[in-house]
Image 1 (cartoon, rainbow over the protein chains, first blue to last red):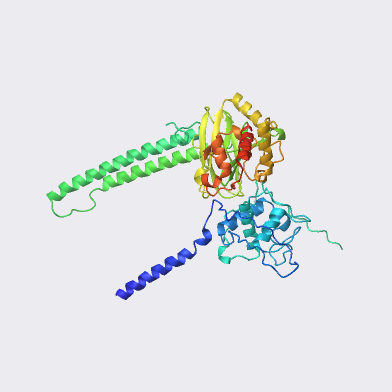
Image 2 (image 1 turned 30 degrees about the vertical axis):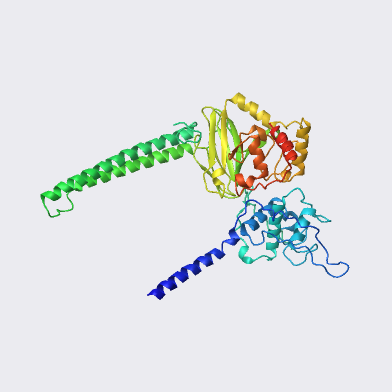
Length: 183
Length: 316
């Protein structure tokens, strides 16, 4: 009898612990902390360097495992028209963001400085157009495109569901006339 | 019953009908409730006396006539209420008269974007969270949403109208007397749903025309040195990525249009009164005032902030 009760309690404790494990990914930080504002210092964008290899400055992206922040990043990605060149990660006018080819480095601080500084031949600089916090959120989203973050942090359903229709009424497209057949 | 935000303080034809319907329901339901309680009380007292007389329970069906009568009355009353409700619904849902002024309301998380439409492009303008309308003129309101489902509701003027993404709808309303009426999002839309309000100012046609022509003006270039510096701060900070100020290079369409910010009575969709202190607090730390909203905190030096405030407050 006593053993049964102990088992019951143990089960409850284990279930609560299991539930708590899910809390982290939904943690919302509304006010940015100084850590999130930490700008990377000098970021190396290439592999080559003289002398023995020196470890680079590693800046952890505070939002990498955070589902709401990744969803915010997705919203900003749309609002800042990143999709205009990179499309939804597949690339078009700009390079793709979901493969393993990174011209200027794939580390969070590399992506951060690419967004902030801009890059030659088309990537505009978002310096003074986005706050650091917002850039870090976009970084988190961009990294999620290639499956870099923990899959458990990916939002199953983005918080920001954008309406396809921006107020322009849909007109049914007229049926295309079949191409005239040449004899 | 007076109130800034009250469906029982009707100021328009549709709100008047909704208010009448509310009073019909309220009075009928009150009378029925009192009758039912009286019957219950009578039954309790009656059955006690009955029990004392004969100790054994009698046959069940000795109230057939009373129960049948009460059922008939209930059916008739419910039918009457149904007819009143359907009639009101039909009257309130009529299409907008042809002489109406058209404006478009777009719901965003968590604020309202308002476009005043006109056949003449130079007479169109955009504002946010504050609607001015002339008294006595029907206002056709086209609604849409840019993100999730919202609901446009100004209780003193009309019932609710849901804003469903990808599904533009329209309704119309009219104010019969001047006044300030508060509106509110009436469909849960996220963390700051409660702080998604708007103000409708109904004013005599002459005053409305004056307000409208003021809104159409491009604000004059900043007059003082402080305001000039404030404009430079505005343009150098992330502000123009989301906000528009006519006459400058700022043309973002993600956040509210700030061209005539100082003419509005509230900040952040009715969350804060539009005063210098609240504006400063909002720019520096919007996430404390309205956690979760899309405005990022802007880090500013004190003198830059003062210049920016002077500039924004000059946008009448």
